[in-house]
Every structure is written in structure tokens, then in C-alpha cells.
Image 1 (cartoon, rainbow, N blue to C red):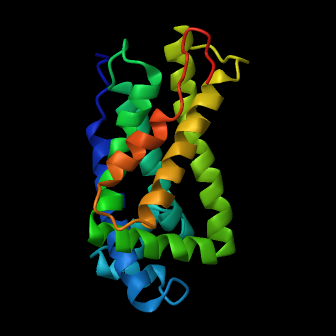
Image 2: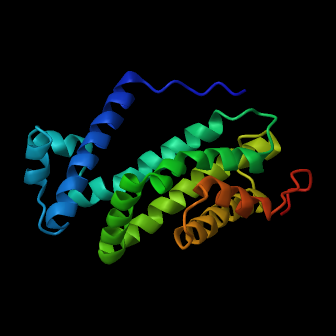
Image 3: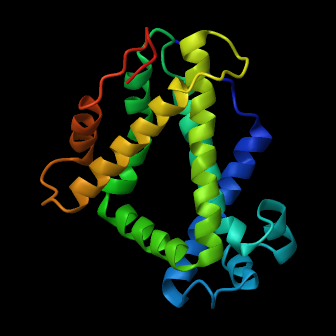
Length: 207
């Protein structure tokens, strides 16, 4: 198994502070609306000064969108932790396990859906959301390329991007199907079935 690089204490502390700020801010957004919530209110609710807030997020928009950077880092770290000899497609499925709680836990799901509605309905947030989701995939594409080629150098081979894109499409299809179901089955099984419909030949790097 690949030994993941340890996260420095300072970085762990920063992430914890960002996570706490995000949670506090989301409570305020859901209670009084995104536009009506100020940075001063968020900082006060978190027990810090406005100046300290800006040490962690440049703006209120960055606070909302910043969670996707944290999400990207978690997914990249999860892929780094998978065994080197594990098929890439299987590794990606296991990486997606970090999304299960956000979907299956009723409280987290309701909170997440409410925040996604804020992002969708706020043009500047939605545009940045699309950019951040592209970053998530780019982080994984680079790692998949390394797994397939054994080299860190950039490659013109489209297979890594195709594989990662297909995996995310499976996740979206599974989420949509699960959301309209009676939810008697866990989301993970929908994800298993969605990803099982695609076979990845890693020897020829094709789907």
C-alpha cells in the first residue's frame, strides 16, 4: 500500500478551523439566507475577529466554495492511500466512499442539499463551483495517469481523463437514481451497480 504523505500540523489546524467556520456559516445561511449573512456575523458566531476570519477565507464566497477544495484534497489523499496494485477503477470506487455520509445521513443530506441550492441560485457561486469540481477531477486525473504509466510526467493520453470522467458520471447517475428511489437500499449499492456497468481495461487504457 502507498504510504500517504503526513499532513503537517499547521495544515491540519488550518483545515479544522476552515471546517468549523464553514459549519457555523452554513447554520447562518440556512437560518437567514446567504445574501443577508455578513462576514462580521460569521466571525462573531465562530468566536473570532473579522481579521482572523480573513486568515482562513478571502471572502464569504470563498468560504462557501472552499469546501470543494477540502473535498478535492480528501479525495486525492484517499486515492493516494489505495494499494498500488489495486485496479484504478476499484480504487476510484473506494475513494467515493467519502461521499456516502453526505448522501445517506438524513441530517447531512438535508444540509448539503440546502447549500447546493444556494450555490445553484447564486451565479457567482455556481460559476466557481464548476471550476472547483474541475479541479477535483484534475487532481485525480494526474494520479490515475501516474498509476497507469508509472511516471509523474504529464501525458497526452486521454485515458486517465476518460476514466475519471466516467467514474464521476457513474456517481452522478447513482445519486440521481437513489434520490428518486424509496431509499431502502444504501446509496453505496447504487454506486456499486453504476460503476459495475462500465469495464475499464487498464492494459489498453480503454473503457
